[in-house]
Image (cartoon, rainbow, N blue to C red):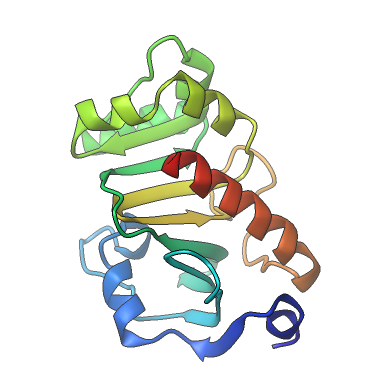
Length: 198
């Protein structure tokens, strides 16, 4: 609440039904069995009503047995955009190979950017459109942004802090974003979003 007041944002303890319904389109909120978990554990919702389109920050807590994650998620909606569905996750090359063998999807490789492809696992249901989107300019700008996973679907994007086992660096299970970190992360998330929109 204090952070919301300082940044001029509206605050809610939990998400509304409309947001939860839209989030079900993203793989971040789907279990391995395909059943969605988007209805649970979305807390501390901050909305920026001044942003062109829609911008929402929230925390998503998910637990599996004795382990789990606390991710900070930035949700953007930009009417008029039409991105291909894609998921971009920072992932060690060995884990990419393992996941590719398990799922039969080795991920898309961005031509002439082998370091990017070794660091990020990119999947999409429209390979051609996704590779057109991830051109040299966008890939170069994303290579300097560490610690975010990104998913898109039509006119919506989520950018989150990826506190999961897939992270190559700074893995922090259950670690929530401190209030002092939020403004810096928010600026980075907006910058990433604008790069996709430009």
